[in-house]
Length: 357
Image (cartoon, rainbow, N blue to C red; front, side, top):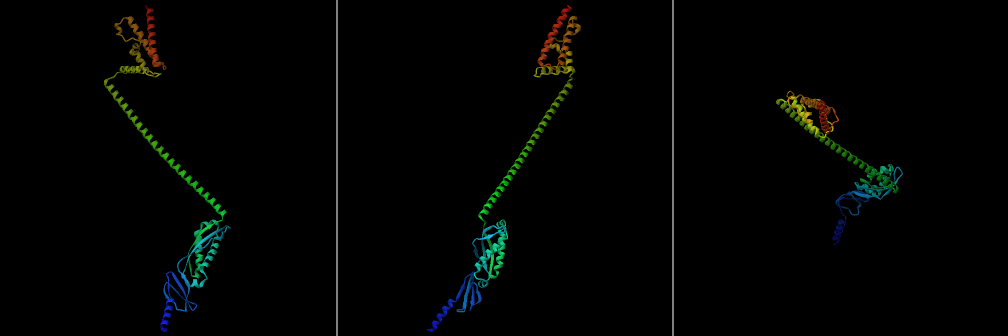
């Protein structure tokens, strides 16, 4: 019976001294009050009444969010800064025996380091240099906590809150900066628009000028071809006239016919060539205008009729010369002058004849 009781007691002691260390944890074991070993994850047996678990430590990375604290910058601006520190235990023995309450010590060390770093910087640098502050704090804290068995893996400055009056000034400054950038962007956009519009106008004018140039070239080519055709037709006409044998008298008659068409037009001035005026006298055209025509040969006419014809021919020639020399004569005036001259010539002739009789 006694043996059974002893065995039961031994079994209870054995069960109570068997320990299972979870993953990511470690146990610091003391034997007779002195550090003996560190148990890592797994099954372990503790000697009753001799071994003691001095500390159970988590090997996970721990996040320590410290409350905001007041700091003073180099330019004497007080502001509130809060930070986050990421650390993990790398030496369980040092954490257990190196410092009392390592996490509280780390918090105080972080606050001190943050004040020292920001105290060497001005406000603008503090607001724009968070990465630099984070890196410097990590280096300082990692070196300081190495004897404690801690590894600072990362430090982040969460918020930097300046005083209300500084915040208001910064807000005004940021608003002015935004307005300036907006003005610059609008000016650049307007400049781009003007440049593109000017470029478009230039291209349009170039195209218009090229179109006008092509049109002028085409028009000039058309006129040149038309003139060439006219000259070619005239050359052919002259060649045909030459072949037919046109005389000077025929050309003079054609010129007189053309003068008739000119007299029927709307022109206010008529310039008659001198040789055409001589032709009028020589061919007796003025006699036709006066109602007379060349008669038969003067040898077969009576003396009195020959005298009358000579007088009429002379008057006709004088009339033709008068018409040719007067540059202000219109077609209507020329017709009236011819009729008046004809009437005057008839009256003068009748008067002379009467006197002779």
